Structure formats: structure tokens, C-alpha cells
Length: 191
Image (cartoon, rainbow, N blue to C red; front, side, top):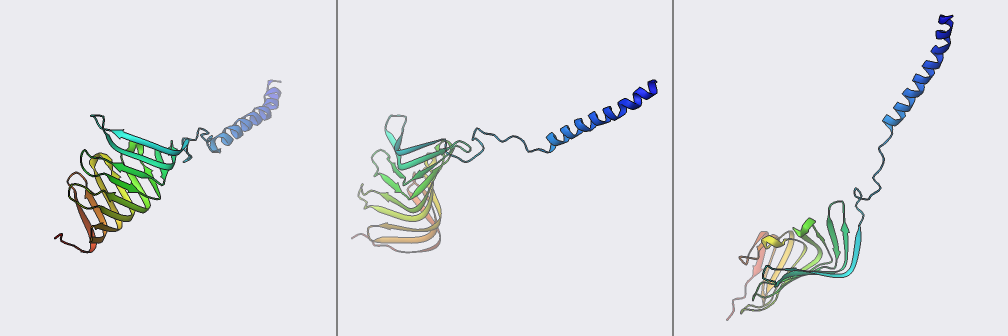
């Protein structure tokens, strides 16, 4: 009789084991739940229209200000896209430097800014020097190091002097720049 009971229970135990195995297999092969917080997607978490921000020096004077018609911040990489950016940099008594572009991107904590499309840099006239203009399609700025660079064609004019080349590195602290390749230009010596 014990044997009859065991033989009657065997199909039931086998069926329960198969059901448990099927349930385990289904859960093992299903894709993990998607994060609904948005932190893994590149969606903006806030948008600002007509914004402006200014970084102040230790002494309380404005070092540079950034404004744009639109700003979008992304939480996944903490980057910020800006539309029609305008960056104005001030150094004590030195002439202002103004940068305009079609669009830009600011990295996490503002360590780096990149400008794209119709980039124009203007160092205003002053201290016995005429206005300097630079035009390119891309410009990377590292504000805390006062460095700007591009790997695209660039045209620099000051007064009637003109330089053109591909690739440029500018150290704003030393006021020195170098064009990296295909350099050509004219220099108009002041009388």
C-alpha cells in the first residue's frame, strides 16, 4: 500500500518540480526591469530659456559670464547643451573676450565648454591694440586653465593682418597662440 501511495504521488511531485523549474527558467531569461527614473536615458531634467550665469573671482569681481537663448541639462552625464551661447571673459584691465556660436556644450562642473557652428571670438580693442577676431566651426575652452583649442580651419584677423590655418591652440594667460597646420597669412606692420 505504501508503494501504491508513492507511485500515485510521483506524478504530482514531478509536475510540481517541472512547474518550479519553468518558473525559475522564465525569470532567469527575462530582461531586467528598466530604470524608470530617467537617469540612464539622455533626457533633459530641466530646461531654461534666456538664461545667464556669472562666475565671480575670489575678490568678488566677475571673471566670465555665460548666457544663451536656451539651456538643457542632462542628469545621466551632468552635461548641459546651450543654444546661441555668449561667453564674456574679463581679466582686470585687459580687454574683454567675447565668444559667440550657434550652439555649445558644457561638461560636468563647467570644467570644459565646446562651441559649435559659426564660432566667433572677439578680443575687444584696448591697451594700444586693435580688435582681434577669430572665426572657426568648433572651439573647445578650458576656462580654469585659460586655454582654447580647435582642430578645424580657423581665420584670425587683427586690424589689416590676417592669419589662416587648420588647428589652433591658445593660451590666454600668456596671450600666445599657435596654428598647427596649413598656415598662411599677411602681416600689416603698423606705421
